Length: 401
Length: 135
Image 1 (cartoon, each protein chain N blue to C red):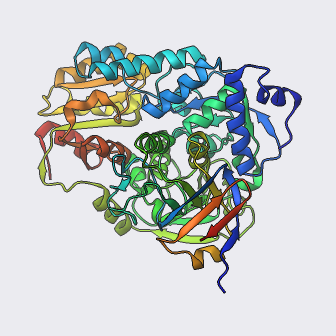
Image 2 (cartoon, rainbow over the protein chains, first blue to last red):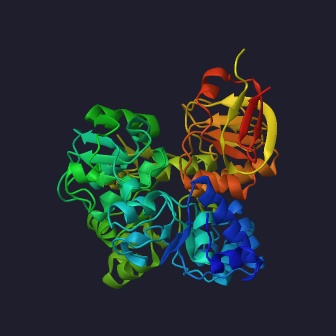
């Protein structure tokens, strides 16, 4: 790679050791992908996780004097005040979250604690070159907004935020943004939940950039969010196209860059049912709790739930994870009160894969999000996966068919 | 005489020599028991097998960067991480995890390697010089 004088100075330590470490890592990444140069970014999103590797890396950079030139938004850990006030988290983990907060604050990050920056907290323009990590974020900013970001890791995105540059490779180039897999969706796609399930078919879709056909003309932001989140749970996808919907796919010709797809895949209702069976616990049982908001639920989804639980009493715990913005709006609009009257809780700034959920260890939850069901397995928490209405009913009745 | 030395392309620097473990499925390091390096992911090609101290040969990574980095970190803390990785489809999350955790990683290995190598073979990966050798 050919570096500018400024970039070379960063690598040589003229801007401090922290910046030098970040630049060294980025140069190694760039050389892996045969990048010729580095280019500036205008936005970044760091998928901090409040887990050991993440904190180790953030503190390493902070202690070496690093500061973010481009202030990134960040993913949620858990809401320190909420969980410590209710004594739901062990002191050592409360400390971990405090350390995470302090490290990212010290680095100069925007402490948004929200995994859906592409919806409200950090929205890019078409063509903007950015460094976005977080499973649901990279596909969304590329596919829906037409911005340009490689599938950054939380760690590489943090390096980019510190140096203000990324190596120029991959999705920063027009020719790499074309689709190469034609995915004909014959399955019925009626709700946002159906996009969760479609996204879990990464193994069948295979490696590459899918171009989906057969989908409805109007697809909600929640559906796009769900699709991206699960594509990156069942595989590794930085971009997709939806014919006639996403900005770089007005026609198949444009979506495929004039080339033939290297693979064609058909998705049927049977595929959707089969993958659900593989990832979900069996139904026909009592459940202990419901959890929504992986990725963070929108205000519309909070309202959807409020409408269905108003005046009723939930039999089981219901946790709704949102950004602090959505929580605040829900409070102002009276939705939060409706939900808490029913026995549910809207919790801001929090992720399901966190140690604040220790009381759920060994319990059975219900969720509409396969990602919510997937990672917490390691914490001994298992889920039945069903569409949102069924989940809400399960929380009301205590069981799922 | 079978070819034993193959060209490759460096992703993460370093040299390592160990027994090979081959996976047909993409790997996500989180659903692995750090105490033993054993894959606990249901229905995975390596389910029940340990990657500790092995040269891991696999197509690509999957899952979020959070889990890839933390999974590898936990394995390293316990001394059960793979000693090197040989992959087919580099993607940034996997690549940056290997670079930051300082585990040698290569890709673009001469396709003949995949016809010859078997799990259990002893292999030397020299990322710095772009060479993979079956010993």
